[in-house]
Length: 200
Length: 327
Image 1 (cartoon, each protein chain N blue to C red):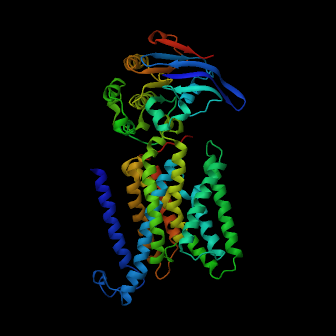
Image 2 (cartoon, chains in turn yellow, cyan):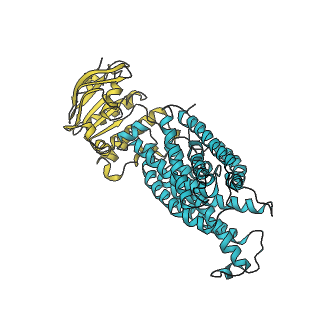
Image 3 (cartoon, one colour):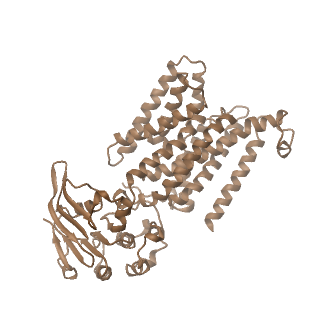
């Protein structure tokens, strides 16, 4: 379980996240929604340890985040950032092999297949469209073996068909794992989620 | 398969260049090189083993160190412009060398000299790291500014030093292998080897690191720790190199670009080939430096600039250049 309680974050003296509480359990697919600037990405960065909370508590599987080593945090949760920096010409295949084999999810092949990444395995990431790069980024996150998956705006560059396909995959993954998807524009999608967390 | 051919080819080239470096020079050998193996007396044997051999070993070691350092530096700053010289390591090592020599604390090429160069290289890189604003080109611009300052301080120390012979160091400052001897090679080799081991260790993390700080953290790698270890590795590669042969331009910048075009951007794979191609390049440059205008010798750093800069521009114009600019 990922649990956050009264979590607040200030950047300078600007309040970005105002004492939010919530949790993510295994077996659920949760939508994290809210308008621009409501702190969705900040919450993900806090859970990812990229930012330190100004106040409040944050636990992964019952343990304070700060007390877990970075490499062990990555065994509990895997996060797809909104924009991953692809600035070198890695082959997609290389990017999917960045994690050692023993850190990979059992269903790696299935995930790559479902995301439609198989056809572009030998392409350079720099030659791909934004939508394809986003799928690769998603694949990198989902094949990292973990209990929880947090995805920041995974649909922003996807067409309707791809969105449906990705959602089906996420529902499949959510049978055994906990998933939280950040999206600011999901009016027509919320029926696909078990519940919604709204930030304001 | 392709990669093993590249290794083989660049290694064979290394052997050929090394033999040529022993064979060619101002003094024409009367005895064939093969017959000099194991001999210590006579003009030919002395020329080959006392003068040319340490020099070729130096070119090999320093070339490999600069090549690997370039690959690590570009990876760590996620920037194809990041040469060790641009991020303060070279100027730090220069100052570290000048400081001990001009004050008479240590002799040129001594262990203390090398240790001081490593220490100053690391300190200047960390200084830049902590002073630089965490955005855009802040790091590189801070690096250029600090480098200029350190170089100027070194220049002042040379000017006011009362130690005889310190002014002669300006030749060294352009980059030259002329001052190398087997004693210096013995002193710098172990430090550079430590640098290689650290670089191999760091390079394993650099591929994940290349996806950005947050991304790396989410994948289980601490980006700050990677940077600290990389700076230490770079100091061990650059410090001894600069202390022995001065600042040699463009090798650290050029080699990673060549290697990336050949085998792609994976740092894990780049380190080995960068070492061999760096050594190839410096052996070749040194051969040219001491033969094209015989009997005059040109500082090696001038040759690497003269060849390196145009080659770099050509490489960047190829369609396979594997780096996007963020303009």
